[in-house]
Picture 1 (cartoon, rainbow, N blue to C red):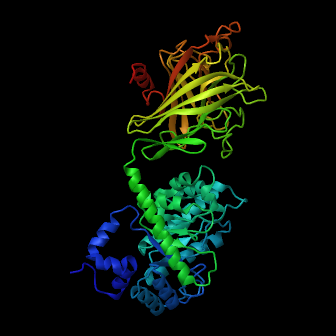
Picture 2 (picture 1 turned 60 degrees about the vertical axis):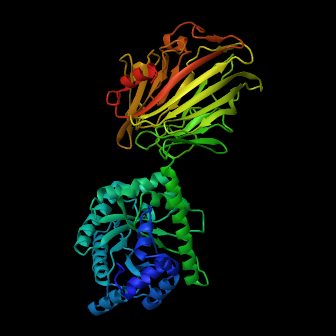
Picture 3 (picture 1 turned 180 degrees about the vertical axis):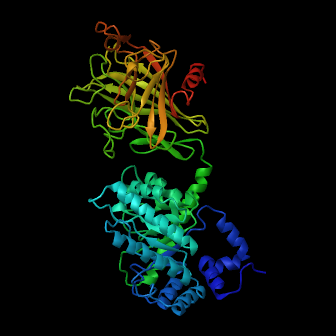
Amino acid sequence: MSTFNNTRRDFLKQSMYFGTAAVAAGPLGKVLAMSSARRGAKMKLGLVTYLWGQDWDLPTLIANCEKAGISGVELRTQHAHGVESTLNARQRRDVKRRFENSAVTLVGLGTNFAFHHTDPAKLRGDIDGAKQYIKLSSDVGGSGVKVKPNDLPKSVSQQQTIEQIGKSLNELGLYGARYGQEIRLEVHGGCSQLPVMKAIMDVADNPNVGVCWNCNSQDLQGQGLEYNFNLVKDRFSDIVHVRELNIGDYPYQELMNLFVAMDYDGWILLEARTKPDDRVKALAEQRQVFEEMVAKAQNAGTAGKSASGVKITEGEKTLRVDINGKLFTEYCFNDVPRPYFYPVIGPTGEPINRHWPMKDINPDEAKDHVHHKSLWFTHGEINGQDFWGEGSNSGKVVHDKFLKVASGQDVGVIQSQNKYVARDGKVICTDTRTHRFYNRKDGQIMDFEITIHASEGKVVMGDTKEGSMAIRLAPTIRLKGKVGKGHIQNSEGHSDGQTWGKRAAWCDYYGPLENQIVGVAIFDHPQNPKHPTWWHVRDYGLFAANPFGQHDFERKEQGVGDITIPAGESLTFKYRFYFHKGDTNQADVAKHYREYAAGK
């Protein structure tokens, strides 16, 4: 016997979801079990009556959704369906009955009530108006009401408005819970920046209040879609608004990948913008696109599960390094002044490096030293030629070829060969770099080994502080600056500003990043020339190990720090980057260095 009740509604829903072929293939319950086992299988496509359904009365709306295989609808206020707060009790029961006797679920009601108003009377009016629609949604069989934030008036502080919106939502969340109605805050208007939405939701902590993702252009700003998605994904409501999935340049497949990965089980509601001649046909086409996107995301997710460990993927200009399915860094090697790693994602999922000059997305970042590109190795004086800066007299480190690119469960490897080309085009020397990326539970670890070859004749690595194994850190981690709250510690007990120019086996730079303390320690291998190295570590976020700049660091005569590599010979330096949570002691930096020195 079927486990489904034999009602018209159930029959229609089964027909819409599975079709006659699935029913013929075997028991429907078996098909259900197979379908729902995959992540994202419970997501459903629905319609917002704006714009495709705005002129359909309720019977026509339901009939057209059934024809197109659309299983849910959000009724936007002031449309032809006529479901408004003015309906009497009998009319409300009739609406509820129409949906119950159809294959279409009434997902909820979409309103324009907003809570940014500086006029207290208008604010109270919108709160009370939203409550009327909460009651209406309950009466007609919906599960929630969509509202808007909706602006940040310049006449008051942004924080004041955020708190006002959040408190209004808490009041509605409490009221809605009495009627079994979710409050769905659409990402909209002047509050469309996702950091603003997160700030609102931090205030609106009632669990009955959720975010309605709205597929705005702002989703792609700042650090991109995935970063913004993650800001609010723990507070998603039961609905998402999308536009036509196959029109425009919004990355809908990437969005579906994210929803499938989190096993989202809500409604993806189509809020169409175009005006097709046959809207029912267009709805059916959108359903097909949606199903194809979900299937693609599910297949990608299945492949991702079997691809744990370190995965290195080659692109045109970069090599992407993922650890257990998450981006760690990208090796930028093509059409650049020198190879570098950007971004570098720290242990909390946030970039630990400065973005500028690769991207100009953080107003708190100082726009100085254009040559400080995230994480890199080079030197300021090689046979008298500057390879540190990017001025008109500077040389370039040019990628030649990859010797090895290998993914692995425990470690991934990038090995490359590079040429040091002077401003006149002459090759000064070459190097071989071996980068190892580890899949470890005790922190993110990257080894950087570089062998400099005197392949073109004798090489003199000059005595200058401008070098060498370096990273430029995020502004909040730096020691000084308008948002700098970081600290520096080295193996010899020096701290903060005392660490510059000092010799030490390791140095650690840590500070707050999105309200969590994170840091990066650089380890100087005991076999390195002139170990323990000097540290060119600045209070503005530059952090570099430099074994050459002795005269700058110790105020000695020029040239005392030179290292000469005879023609045909080579010199190797080894470093480890340990990206960690917490401060130096909490992260056991000293212990990790001892393990590195012992070859672990």
